[in-house]
Length: 231
Image 1 (cartoon, one colour):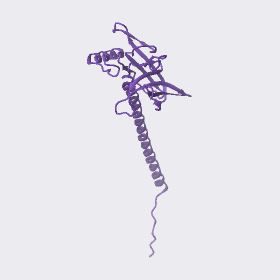
Image 2 (cartoon, helix red, strand yellow):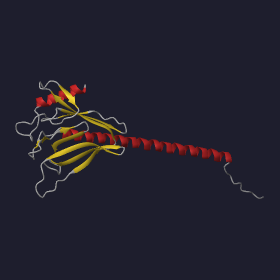
Image 3 (cartoon, rainbow, N blue to C red):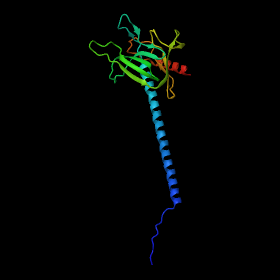
Image 4 (cartoon, rainbow, N blue to C red):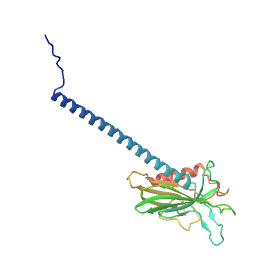
């Protein structure tokens, strides 16, 4: 008797069902991967945004907050107070920390620069004191923040009674520092930037412009003033 070997196989319906299930699994797999990639990108964007805010805030806090009330009196014909403020421009003198490569007082110039449809905050830094003969006067330009939609500065000054004051749009031809500087920033991506208020030292101490630390009572007064204006 001859036995024939019968080859078992899949029916067409079974193949279609298997292909359908495989397609569903692939779709679910790629959907999960896309969700993970989007979540990762959103996290990276958020970290970048927080870093940008921290860098800008630290710049204003560390440099504008320690601005020196000094005079540019190197020329008899032109003697200007170092701090000059406009609604979108700011010039002041401050110093880098001891760990930085640059030493001595530096003249900072902050401007809102427009190039085509783009706006960005740019900081120019040069030594405040004139370079000695034969030395190169190095100017550095740094982009502080890109994709800026709006940027504005205002300056708070107390009246003679030192109890009340007002905000001004500019700080020109003055002989003292403003008590506070308010900074407002809006970026193109619409991210939230908290309004910043930076306290400055209004007058140099008796020991000179290099010693401008406030005592505890003055620090408490500055902090109370900022909290009252923020309410």
